[in-house]
Image (cartoon, rainbow, N blue to C red; front, side):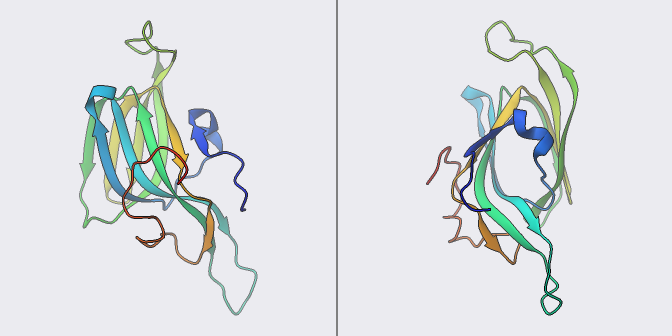
Length: 158
């Protein structure tokens, strides 16, 4: 799984991406830029166990910054003890953006980030997910705080 081919994933990659059990560490808003950002551990691949002595999955995982663009109608309904994992991300209600004359996108969606403890929904034209480090093989679905260099909304490779 090493040697990542693509360091920035977008809504064009959406149909190939899986979000189940990806941890959310932080969320931030860039009001003037209409951006909604998430600091997450993205699980690129679940590795099926092959050894009967060690029957547990392993995971190719990396810290990432997920940035949704042209965001509005944000609703957050989450009740948690500060441990939030994504169940799935889906989109519906495609339509032309209100400001399509001023941006280079022709479709916006209602995005729903469903977690084990609630959901976040909003309208957006799409996203960019910035992979900050090469994925590493782990026995856990989460990276340690030091492994991921703490909380970050950095939009590039570290």
